[in-house]
Amino acid sequence: MNGFKPLDPLLHSQLRLAVVSLLLGVESAEFTFIKEKTQSTAGNLSVQLDKLSEAGYIKIEKSFKGKKPVTTCKITKAGITAFEAYVNALKGYIE
Amino acid sequence: MSEKELTGQESLDLIREMIQQAKSNYQKGGSFHFLLWGWVVMFANFTHYYLEAFTSYEMPYIVWVVTFPAGIISAVYGARRKRKAMVTSHLDRMYGQVWVIVGVGVIVTLTFMPKLSYNHNAVILLFAAVGTYISGQLLRFRPLVFGGLALIAASIIAFSVSVTDQYLVGGIGIFAGYLIPGYILKSKEK
Image (tube, rainbow over all chains, first blue to last red):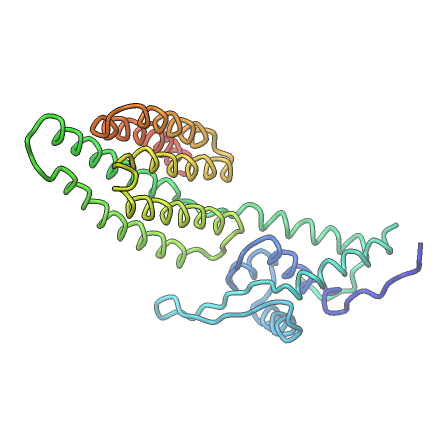
């Protein structure tokens, strides 16, 4: 073993990691879907999504479904790379 | 979900659970397109065959105009479903893209009908076979896989008969390749 690699603090948080893992498995997902699957509150999820978006890990698009505003999230290439690095670093902690 | 410090194992469990959640969310309603196109193309094939083989009507191909409204209905239905869905899986996207390129292939084939000496029906059956077979494999739905193989068989037969008879073969092929698996798929979607 070559010691512990630091874990990306942006991903090493329960809700943010859940969001990124979920988005990794789909093409794109709406806010309500992510909220339901991660069982989070709208307020907290909103804050965490903004943090991930600021880091460039996810892309957030706002649009309208009729008159209802809809937020759609999608993982970016940077997000996938960060997730892979996180999982690799995690291996060091598990072994 | 709280913001407590995660252990390595908890992180892995969380990742596994979320990937699992993402997996089970395929959009339903794929049968609509198979049934719509199945009926429209079968009707057009049989009508064209009847007009060409048994009447002296000079423009039997006019029956194919029914595919224009079908194209519009298909596009509107697809767009509406997409708008309604809360999530789009990788599979949903792939599934859609397969049929986009099949559609492009069919349009190119129709554009060069004279160069194919009007054997385009056999080529179109091949395109339909490829789309149906891949759809069946993506959905892991065997009736569609067999539907694709039935369309391959129809294409081979179509290549071996006269241009007029190709319409009869095409109609039967679409019945076996689109409508039968389409109805089985519909019954599974409920």
